[in-house]
Image 1 (cartoon, rainbow, N blue to C red):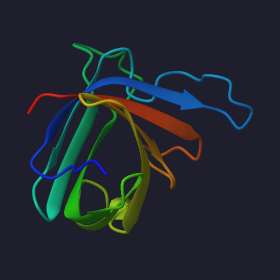
Image 2: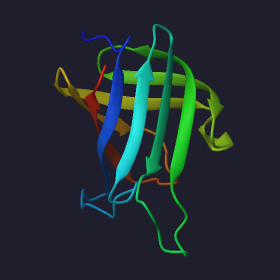
Image 3: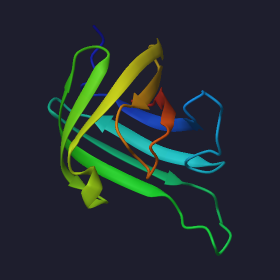
Image 4: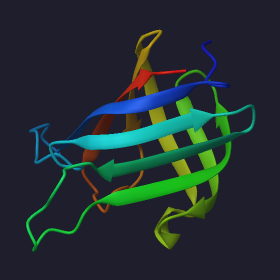
Length: 127
């Protein structure tokens, strides 16, 4: 089983899909930004639409949370104790697929970024 402890990841792609698997508009815009960091027992994640500017009628997407986590090799469960939105202060469950030693795809199993749709966040290891 691969360990997440001591690793840091940069968000490189973010996708959203409907129930039939059709791709929807990007959940973090065309320029997703994010950092995901794991220590021995705690993790922190921050994601944002990194576009330099947005139309005035569009609100910038931002989410962050932190907490103690467990990882069994495929499922990450974070017991959130601090977050940018009170709705995130609950167990956050993610499926993690290692595409390579330096690339992971994470799919949330519960609502995140205000969407009930299926999401896929692709991360590249930077540390």
